[in-house]
Length: 483
Image 1 (tube, rainbow, N blue to C red):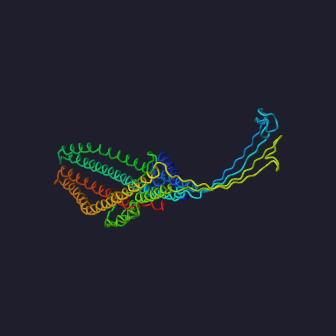
Image 2: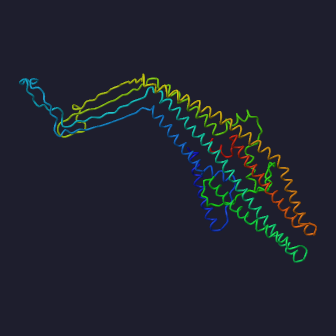
Image 3: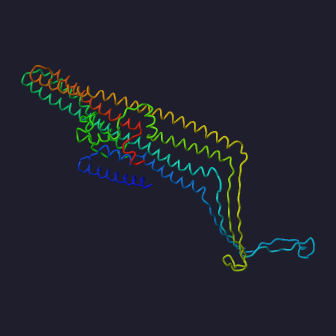
């Protein structure tokens, strides 16, 4: 359990740092930086689902002890004392004592003080369900660990996608700001041209309208950033009011590069490359996901548990055998009580016994329970088959999505470069009196769309890679806390 205790210790540390960061932000206005690896580790230590999975493992540990307790010896002891304030009287025929027939005489039975005590040891020699329960408890503990693995894989994937969404929201907001800066700069230049009599003031009017129409988009992008950050905090299990500066730059992320071009993307690229991307056959994928995915491993353990349940149901048709041993002392004494009286007023007895209990018929209850267990086994196996096929399909879909994105990279990057060149040329043509504001506006729209296209491409790739890692069951950082 030391592993899970260390997780709790990490949780306390992370919460402390988060609180300190929040206080620092409120006092200085500077938001602390948050890398993707830090976000993942925080989620693994602090997410509600993770903590619940750890509690379930701890509960399973206790269940193992309970199961062993069913086959350990049981020792009971008792002691009692009875004081007769008046010794009980019974009436017996007088003729027993030589008296006249048909009459009764009172006779006192008992003593003033009566003591009784002893202990009993009982041991189960054979009870099939109890012995099967021990193996079942171990499997239940393993099932909870595999459930922990599955939940950890899901939490890490959710955190990665939430982090990428926050990066995309930041990039969208930056592009909106950049677009407004371009419009304002263009507006100033055109106002100067109007004063010089080089252009008509209609171009200035068009720019003012375009600028006003763009300002709501900037506000929406700002709100999207706040929402994305809150969702990331929820994924990490942190309060939504804690603010971070997300580390990463989508515009500088090179999908096809093995290394990060920008230092801001070092952590992103490192995590992206933790799980190699392979294009395997369906049969190879089926073998891989069966060994790696937490949900499939959990279903395998569930199937093994059901085998034990079937075996336990079969043992119910067998007898139970128990042994017991008891030793008791009794004492009777008149007058002032002395603990368990004296040796001549005290007696001891010992009993050794065996009990065989065999249910021969109980209305087909045992037979019905066995058949239900076998049906449940078939149900679990069908779940395993479907889950495996779904995992293979998810992996193939992720592979196809990533492959398509790889093929789009050259054209999207080329489109971005051409859009930048086109926008610069449109500005030069306008300055030289060869172009119009309409051309500049069109070039600006093309450039903005190209920038959004590249950011979207990178976001889609990072999200698809996270889904691929989840699909094959090789999610970064999960093995370190589960195995």
